[in-house]
Image 1: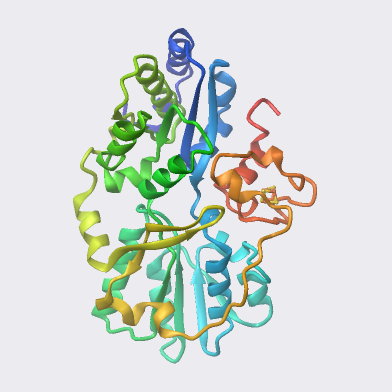
Image 2: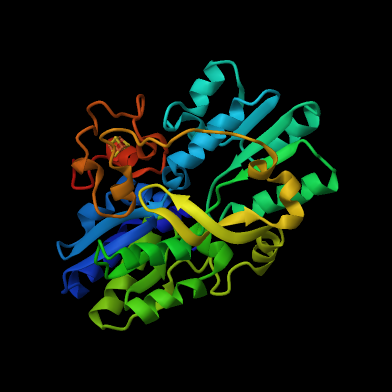
Length: 364
Ligand code: SF4
């Protein structure tokens, strides 16, 4: 198949659904790690197509949602510095921190700009040599290589007014952390497509070997996801736990070595603070010492104050797979995409926004 439409063919989808129904005997629970998968699963009504034996849970794979309030508060405090311009992706601007948001900081007269890539932020730095331009970098292994390329570009141009607040996070360590917490019993994981295009499928091997949990990397089209679920069901029914790829057109087992090298040349692994989980050792990316002149945390004095969580918001337990948005008393009441209380309602890939936009996944 070559074209997107071919990955949405109803006849092929029906065949896969029939096969899943025929094969699935055990009661199993699958987690899709990635927010992009959650959106596709809801958008195409995939949950309703599955037999009662399969329960789907959403995981922590939404970069905006997993950004801890402590880190958001740092970004807001940086925005309040004199002569600073904060640049970030659109969703980040709207997420409420402990006391404010970047959007509110902007309304208060601070210079906060939405950019679509790190290169846009570099352009802002070029055009404003008298200002400190700080890019709030979020995302998983998918985005980190492009941010690394931006840092190298800034280095090449000797852009001394360009800085990064690196909030990048790593996927396999947080999967391990969630499994070690032991709050949710999983039979299989729908592994992320875009992250795996960079890191490959090998980094998930420990999940199959040590936890006996099946892993299959999936694309984002309905047939990709159904094929992935079918492969997971087969593994689980046969008690043959391994790592497979249902997204061969996008992912190689060894990943994209060039992108990995680029990422590793600029970043090193460090601790990261995750919403609802806390600081997880070696689960994030920090700038290497040789690039510390670009590191916003090392170049600016800020005091964001004590951290507060939004009252009543259960984003943290939703991101751990322990709760769903339907368990939140604020869902669709005081918390809506127009007036979000927590990040899972702000981000287009957040579980709460997905439940809100596409129903509750059970036909609601
Ligand atoms: Fe938080 Fe709103 Fe989601 Fe509730 S519905 S968990 S308040 S984002």
